[in-house]
Image 1 (cartoon, rainbow, N blue to C red):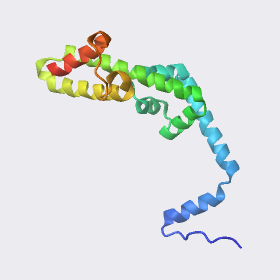
Image 2 (image 1 turned 120 degrees about the vertical axis):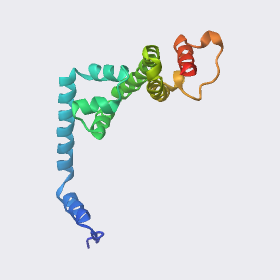
Image 3 (image 1 turned 45 degrees about the vertical axis):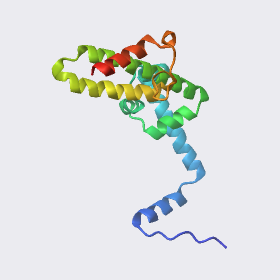
Image 4 (image 1 turned 135 degrees about the vertical axis):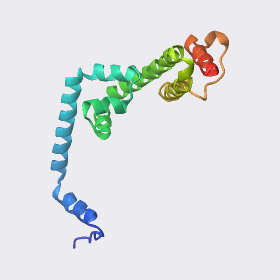
Length: 165
């Protein structure tokens, strides 16, 4: 005897139940293969994995990169999970991206006029926050105090910029 399924209360639930019955595992696998193929083609047309990770290393967000590629966030992370090496490359690119964002704070602060100080401060603070998330060992809030000889030159500049703004 077949087990009774929960009855649908809305049209949306009814449509989901029908779709669930119609899609077999083979159909779902075929859809996933097609999606991965499409993502691979888009990344290849973009310049390949190296170019994708290079953009992230430059401080661009994953969201902005995948939007330019017309890839869904879920599809992107499925693509990353297909190969363990990609996960490592992504982590490295994000750390480098954090450094890039930290360096951008100096350029923003140096080029700001007194009239643009508040906007520049917001831009610096946003990049500093992102840098702390992408490269927490270098720019994170929970960083242990270090002796002056181990403090990076960039970290010193970041602290000076924040005090000035």
